[in-house]
Amino acid sequence: MRVLIAGGGTGGHVFPGIAIAEELLQQGIADEVVFAGTEHGLEAKILPQEGFQLHFLKAEGFVGKSPLKKIRALALFAVSLMQARSLLQRLRPQLVIGVGGYASVSMVLAAHFRGIPTLIHEQNAVPGLANRTLGRFADAIAVTYQESLDHFPKEKTWLTGNPVRREMLRCDEMTARAAFPLDPERFTFFVFGGSSGAHRINRAVVEALPLLTDVRDSLQFIHQTGEKDHQYVSEAYATAGFAGIVVPFVYRMAEAYALADVVLCRAGATTLAEITAIGKPAVLVPYPFAASNHQELNAKKLEDMGAARVIFDRDLSGERVAEIFRTLYLDERLRAGIKRSAAAFGRVDAADRIVQVAQSLMRKG
Image 1: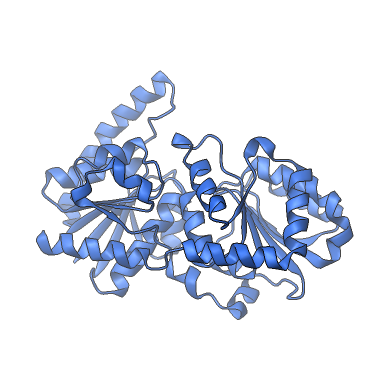
Image 2: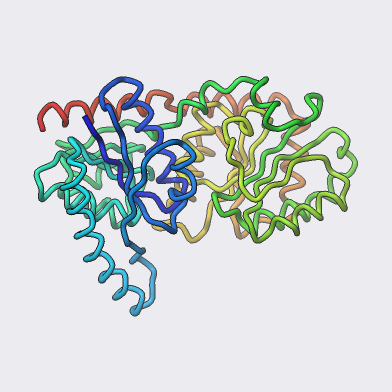
């Protein structure tokens, strides 16, 4: 049996799709899982490396665009709908799963009108336009947060959590140290700002380094900068004399998490699912322009439970980062408390829950 997973654009859509695909194959629910996405999304880089077949659709975003770009997006949507119909005719999947992003809309709609069972997954507390629209047509909806239930028909909506890739849950220290040859005696911060990096986070950490020189010999970093800031951040670490690994993109996220004592990152839904599933203390800097302000809502929910610390983007500075880094490095009891609360919030069985819903749809189909 074949399942098609549609969506992408960012890691927040791609990685849950991979987690679902792994679980479908592991449980033997599907013999093959293929993906549909766009050439310019992160899926084009990640999925081939993960061994999945990826088919391209022409699709672009609509929300927040200029009138001219909205017209272009609508024209491309018509094209992608025809491409989706053709792909479904050729592949004949038994189920289509939408994980968000531009490409999910046309594929889920095309599958619905062909009578193919459909399932969508919503990662955030407040659904975006795409999933709010698809919720009327999909046969089932899986959501991450209790708050999302009010946005979809209750009779076909399931609270599952956000799926996390298996590798995140079972990475051992030996494998991690082979991927990142760091000093096992030093305290490790893992800094990243999403799949493309985040200039605001990069700058704040660079400004924090000179304020941490008194503990420099006890600290080290893994820092994902994005392509644009890589040289600038690398030179700043060298100038300040801090040890660490500075790269444009971290492909071995499980290993980086495994070595990290504390994570500094944005508050995307997939990132939060990962750090809570593995119980990792984190400092969250919500992206201020996320749709429906969902990152700030997601982050505050964790902070209110004692499962993370939050710095709003408007308050981000070298001084603030240095202060919270120093506090978390020195206060082991505080780190342990955050770790316990994060692990209590995390859902390691989210992928299994989604696959149970998928299997039910496939039987009916």
